[in-house]
Structure formats: structure tokens, C-alpha cells
View 1 (tube, rainbow, N blue to C red):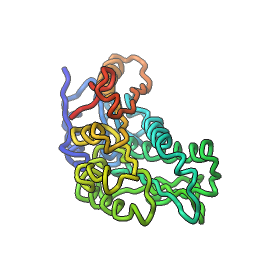
View 2 (view 1 turned 180 degrees about the horizontal axis):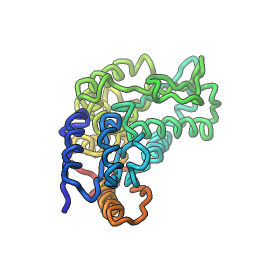
View 3 (view 1 turned 135 degrees about the vertical axis):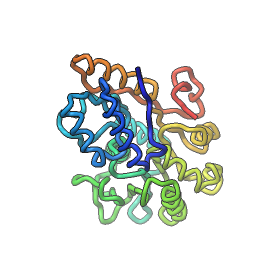
View 4 (view 1 turned 90 degrees about the vertical axis):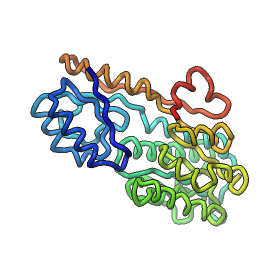
Amino acid sequence: DMVFEGPTSEAAIQEQVQMLQNALAKDPSAIAFAALDTSSVMDQLQEAVRRGIPIIGFDSGVPNAPEGAIYANAATDNYAAAGMAAEKMFEEIGDDLGMATPANPATLIVISQDATSESVTSRGFGFRDGMIDLLVSQAGMSKDMIRVEGNPAYIADDSPQSDNPAIIIDMIVPASPRTQDVVASSNAVFNRVEDDNIRGIFASNEGTVVGVLASTNDGAQLESTYDEVVVIGYDAGEAQKNAVRQGYFLGSISQDPYMIGYKAVELAVKAAQGESVSDVDTGAKFYDASNMDNDDIAPLLYD
């Protein structure tokens, strides 16, 4: 028997806490869990450890969980998937980025819905590091010509911090994951496209894609007003799929939601039966208008 439950939105943290508490009350053989905020469910996770209930992390997983709580994870390698987005963007505008100078710098934007979810933060890190590597290895730039700025959670100790950069990678996190805050951050980005020479935007989940689309008349202005800006999204959804199909977005990264669910349940059953389990990478693909209807991609793109 399988019971499926989920909160109404990624901001409904307390709702998910209660769902996990209720699940534990049913004395399950195992639980597959994607935490919105691990710190909010620490008591429940500790209870699962005490009672020997296996928990399988899936999708965003359960970062920073108590030792022994999470038996394995079924998830996309989000760091690698976002690196793929950096590669695709670089293929499109790498030559232009290579000609940027401190006198006329180019800006790349990464919009991430939060700075706590492992899946979202890994995407921010993956795009950031992938783009830096490409700028150095393919565009011939030194790290002294690059600056990573914005939300401190996305700036590593070794992130380039040029005082006079040719390329700026701006890591943006809205005030909250709520749609109105995401849209406000996206509006602020598009208000400075010309002044800051913004050439690329990576929206790291469907929520931030919604913000980008809301700021650009469902993407139509990306073809007219902001035609110099290359946008790559993540996940799917009807609006995002339309933006890709119309060519407003260069493309998007799709996880494999079918395999995430399949492997999560498979790992949960094995763990419940006392078998040894380990993490599984469920894969990701880049899709654009040319391949999104292909047999290997179309089933992954939910509405």
C-alpha cells in the first residue's frame, strides 16, 4: 500500500511538518520524503531514527538530516544538471561573453527561489561553477576578470571576486518563495537589463520561471524588448513549455520525475525489507523547441 501526500506549495512548510507527523503515526514500513525545510522536521526525523523507520530522500531530498535518518536518495544530480544549462547558454553567447571588458562588462543572472533547499542551491552552484569554468577554459578569461555577487549563500570562498570585472554572475534570491516576491525580483532584473548589460538568465526552478514569464508578458517580450537576453529554465509546466516551444527560452532542463518516483519507492521497499540501499542519480535532459516532442523527452514534461 502506498499513500501519497504533499503540501499545497513549496512555501507551506508547516503543512508538510504535520503531514510527516501524521505519516509517522501510521507506523509505516518506510517513508519517501522531499523536505521543504529540514530544520522544521528535525523532531520527526529523530523519531523515525528511534523507531527504525527508513526514510528515503527524493527530489530535493532531506539535506542536513540527523545521522541515520536517511537511508538513501533518489534524485537528480542538480549540480551537474545546472552545469548543463551553463554549457547550453555558453554555446549560444560564449563568443559575446568572451569580448566583454571591464569597461563594458556583461552580466549573467541566476534566480533561485530560496537559499535552503538542497536541490535549488545545488542548481545555483552548478550553473555558477560551470559558467566560470567555461569562461576560463573556453573564453580565455582569467578568474581576475569575473565577479560572483548577490546572495551570500551562493558565494563560495573560492568564487572569483574581481574589483574590475568583465563578467558579473549575479546570484539572486527573492525575499520569499511566494509568487509575488519572485515576480518582484524578476521585475527588478528586467528593469536593469540595459544598464547592466544582462545577457543571460538561468531560472533554477518552475517557481522562478513563473517570475520571469510574469515580467515579460508570458515570455513574448523576450523576443522583442529583451531579445539580447538568453533565458534557460528548469523543470516544466504549461507556461514554461510554451515559452520553450515559442523560442522565447533557449530551452530548459528537465528532471526525470517518473524515475525519481519509481526509484524512491523501489529504495523504500528495499530498505523496509532490510536490504542495503544507496543513492541513485535519476538523470536530467536539456530540451528545446527542436526535441521537446521526442519520445525520450515528451513524457518527462508535465503541465
